[in-house]
Image (cartoon, rainbow, N blue to C red; front, side, top):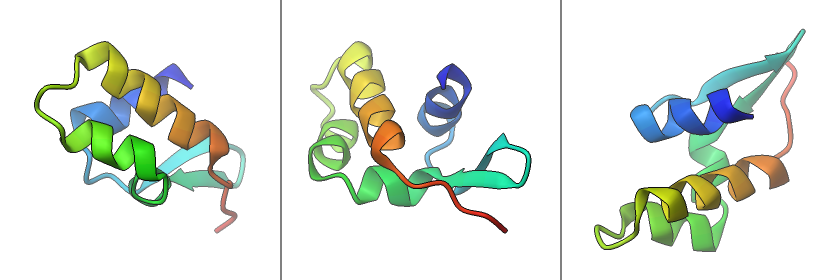
Length: 67
C-alpha cells in the first residue's frame, strides 16, 4: 500500500501498478475516479499528508485489474 501511494505521489502519470501476481491497479483512474481525492491532489494548499491520505483512500477503494 505504501508503495502504491508513493508511486502515484512521485509520478501521477503512472497508470499500472502491480499489487499481486497477475493483478494491478490503475492509479491514475483510481484517483481521478474519486472526487475528493482528485480535488485534494491538485490543490496547491493541500498538505503532503492530506494528499497522501486522499490518494491512499482512492487506491483502497479502487478495483484491481487482471491483465
